[in-house]
Image (cartoon, rainbow, N blue to C red):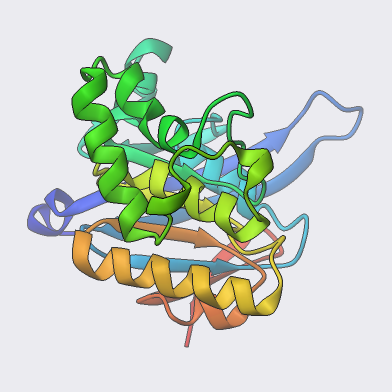
Length: 232
């Protein structure tokens, strides 16, 4: 890969392997995987349950460590970083959206979205202002003061997406973002994701069973039998 191409990569992962050796028989999830994500690019990752998609996503996001290989995030080799530095890189450059929204039950929609900003030391007034902008973008401005228990499943997921984007990250990693939603609500979430991606320039990696969603990304990859290949 050329130096110019490498410099444009948000994520550059090479020769990744994940092997669980604690068990009596070692379990190889995948071995020798390469994955690159360019600035502003979106990639859908398909694969059956247990194929290693979520494990790969967690390694790319610095939430888990590979058994071998390396992940370079925004030019920084995660292997050379302390846990504190990895956390700082995640907070600065990444957003996460999961199948289960993981909102904080005691806080309002506005506060949940603003939480990454609070954690990064942004003044509350400024953080809340940014969170309100994101609430408007996902069509939930009127629900700013509602807590998660007062929101529908689709609304909670929209709040989770807004939270992932409020820090204006370079990349958002999504694990089954529409997995628990009905078809109509899932389509609405898809439209929001694609619209935000088109206007923000943020890169997306979307792990999903939803073939339709995956094929709306710039590239589609398949995780199967420990290998990651591009399709289509």
